[in-house]
Length: 206
Ligand code: HEM
Ligand SMILES: *[C@@H]1O[C@H](CO)[C@@H](O)[C@H](O)[C@H]1NC(C)=O
Ligand SMILES: *[C@@H]1O[C@H](CO)[C@@H](O)[C@H](O)[C@H]1NC(C)=O
Image (tube, rainbow, N blue to C red):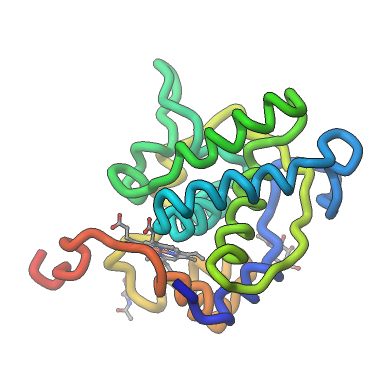
């Protein structure tokens, strides 16, 4: 379960863009929900005992959330009659997992401090905790994100890389987030845990 350190160390230092205007800061919930970080970690721990793979799935969750219009939890929104959300986008459909982990954390937090902790922050905290609970390093997360009220399947489809993307395309994509080639390679080390579907290993045949 122990992934290579560089991937995690880089996750620490990456400042993804955020939907909110006020600067993010550590301890954002110190007054409004002092137990927030403890609760997130506790639910994450319970989920990893039930299903160790949820560590990987939650980590991937952060990547898919943050790359598409900022870390705003938009991928949690279901489709509506006039909005196609991100759940059914090419890289998420039948693939992105652990929605129920984020839901469970949110439920627990709503019981303790209703209306305080954003889902966008929950994803950031849970992803960090997935790393810590897998035996990786610990770090302080900046909080204070706001949840998006909209999502875009089209943006998700346009932004998220295909499993067949070549190196130059991936390097260009990561550069848009000010991530170097070194960052990209290290972050890809995240794939040392979790699973992928079989057909992805035989793409040459497609
Ligand atoms: C560099 C571009 C990337 C591509 C093309 C890519 C592609 C993929 C694909 C195709 C899968 C398998 C999905 C499935 O079978 O349903 C996967 C899984 C995964 N990805 Fe990535 N990925 C990329 C970057 C990242 C990054 C930056 C992270 C996190 C830092 C990440 C974390 C993961 C994890 C943990 C899994 C396993 C998830 C699970 O078991 O539920 N990936 N990725
Ligand atoms: C990488 O893929 C893009 C898009 O499919 C293509 O335009 C480009 O020529 C490819 N680059 C290399 C070096 O193969
Ligand atoms: C990347 O860095 C440039 C220059 O510092 C900055 O203007 C831009 O907003 C950054 N982009 C992202 C996605 O953080």
